[in-house]
Image 1 (cartoon, helix red, strand yellow):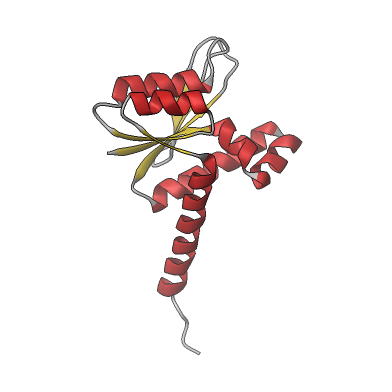
Image 2 (cartoon, helix red, strand yellow):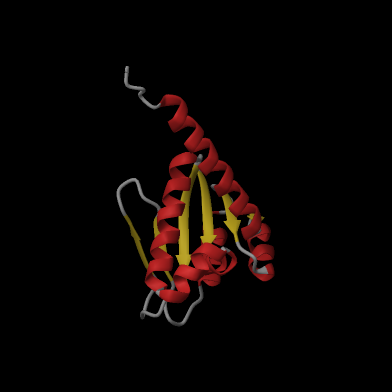
Length: 146
């Protein structure tokens, strides 16, 4: 199984469309990112895990059936530390790719055997996946006889 670990706020702050939404209402920005990551998971070979900085007393995780997994770090930890912990724990047993623009997080992920890609690279992956999905829908759409 291939996993894509996404530093969620790194993506939001690097994606102009999501940043505008996030600046108006943070929850809406997070929701839009989760929606887009779910669509990407459906179009790719990755199981997507989004990690957000949190505020609660402990790290929490949630997922919907066939949806992505979402982590919120505790108030004492950052999303970076959660991603680093996941890389340390699962890097030798799974194919992990980390999406971040944080240099230290990138180096740590690579140390534990993960691949690390910039947010800009990942956004190009999303764009390609969306174009391919639209092409397939157009190709396979039912055309009514006239």
